[in-house]
Length: 361
Image 1 (tube, one colour):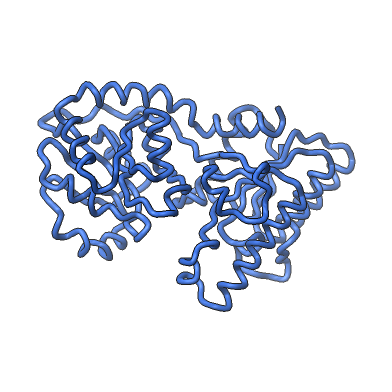
Image 2 (tube, helix red, strand yellow):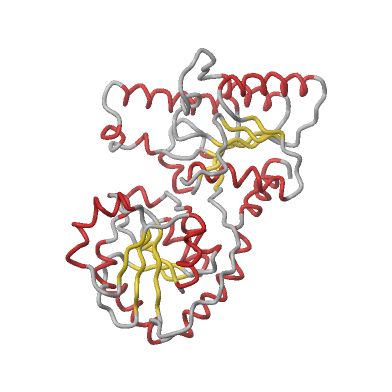
């Protein structure tokens, strides 16, 4: 199979957009495929594409092509040089499709199609980038390739592409069985939140409900700079049973070992109706059930998969759920046991097998 991205893969990536392609590429190898990789800067991809095109024209058999877009328009995810091309990568995908090779592309984000994009990029760059994003979509449509989305809910926001071309391919997880939690006096319900605190991740009402609540603790793990910016918003609702830490990578292991459930009870805005947090699947990979907000993709997934509790953000029902889990630890234990079983259906290797079934099955 051919694995194509119009940028460099970074095995040390910390962001979801950088982690996902690395995990998917490895997953295809893990399930037994020989992977022909096309990635890197423009000059590198130009040489790789020319070589692989010639091999295909000379009879190389390829089962399928899997590609992942960048958050920027194709070709602009790196510094512009003389080798820059905004069409080379999509032309290659179209060539593969016309050569009879099934092609699927993961389309990462539709942030550019929302008014808030104008606050990130000012005119005229805002208009230019939107035009180039739409140009990419027209290229995919003309190529006739299948488009993977993090969720099918996102499809209503993606213009140009025929709805029949969309398939859902959320992030995957890595299975991790942590060390036993340390002995000693601990709260019955130990919640963990790992992620940002920007306007898209408002948790004020959830924090307010947890603050001072008997039997419940919350650890918020976020970037130090982000906490410094947001701390004034949370200051008045903080309590001794809530702590804020700044860790990443392997440093998260101890936090997962201490927790017995994880939190995604953020304020449900339009973005969260279709956006899929990678952390949702990281939580599951660590065997932790999830409390998520209704009206969000995460809430729907948690409810449909029975991997936690879907609650109305800022409602009395959220507080009641916390109290019930404190009083009925057997409910938490039962859901945890189910999470540890069902998580095997959501590994990166499972996502790769889905692509194989879709494109080469």
